[in-house]
Image (cartoon, rainbow, N blue to C red; front, side, top):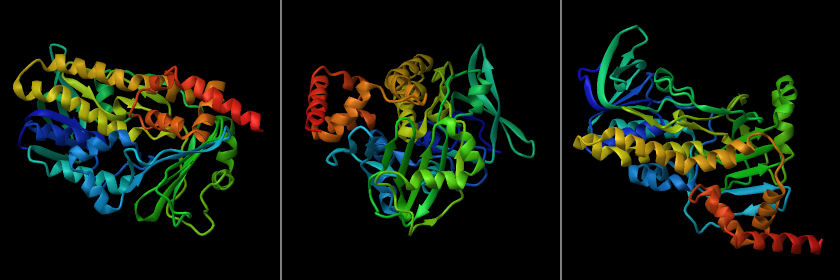
Amino acid sequence: MPTRTAFDVVVVGASIAGCTAARLFALAGARVALVERRPDPAAYKVVCTHAILSSATPTIERLGLATLLDARGAVRTHPEVWTPHGGWIRFPTDVPHGYSVTRATLDPMVRQLAGDTPGVDLLLGQAAAHLLSEGGRIVGVELETPNGETQSLRAGLVVGADGRNSTVARLAQMRGRIRPNNRFFYFAYWRGVRPRTIHPRLWLLDPEMAAAFPNEDDVTVVVAGPHRSRLAEFRADPEGAYLRMVTRLPGGPDLAGAERASKLIGALDVPNMMRPAARPGLALVGDAALAADPVFGVGCGWAFQSAEWLVDHTAAALVGGLDLDGALDRYRRAFRRRLGLHHYWQITDFAAGRKLRVTERIALHAAATDPAFARVVEEVASRRHSSLRMLDPRLVPRALRRFGHTRGDG
């Protein structure tokens, strides 16, 4: 147990979002307790696609993490997408890059980076058991070890960075809005997939999906995302159904000479969930605030970014003794403004497992045949620009002309 019991911030959860928040708060002058229930500093999240969109790269650079990732061989990425409505979309590569890196590499790396930051106390093997409150405001957290020892830490701010099933959110009774996901997922790690590439590849099979994400050490994560109507088939023969699906992908990964480097991992129920991102004395970041369908690979990037937004909105108030709860409310509203449209209009809606709408088919066809249109789609798909970018009235006629011209040639 820590000897110090008073901090500016207690961050519960030492993965991507929690470590980002802890390091940036400490660099801003705050005293931070970073709490992780798992005792192993090398622990990592298993169920993850490992894709980090380019919208999060500035945060990674600000953390001082980019040089570490590059030195370790993380892949600088530019995605490609295949659909039955035009074939391959080759996005431009003269735009900001993302990263692909396994969580086995990333989580220990970012945890050590945060733990080595002056002002951060890393507390492993301890879990949040209760929240402390006074007058309706959260003022700290009670920790518990596996052998039952407890200690209370007081803080101006408690941050829940403990994932989709957040204990902090449950203790604070911060309930989320949950939308079902009508796809399920099986994935495995492969070594030696050919051709080797820096392009994460996504197949939007309408309505199913698949993906192949290259990572360090020549490891590729290959994902199958069938519609829920095929759940019985996959449960009866997960290995066979998975291989049948991924080996039939148009231009898909060649697994013939590859070596399976993991067991087959299933994620059969992955609902979409969004909680309020803050209340007096408490904030949520990463999957604790928003857990989305993994099809578009937003989870890791939004974990980095939401933690950065929290620090940027609250650090001055926290360290300077200003109106912290007002700053938390501004963070809550900014979180919803920046991610709500992406989440509800695009991700959650698409997770229903529906067929692509005619407007979406036209846009994807235009992106596959028009490099200028592909550039616009890349800006939205990477989450560097709002989904409203697609409503630019200049884009619609361009897409229709491209669609009509190609159909006329056929």
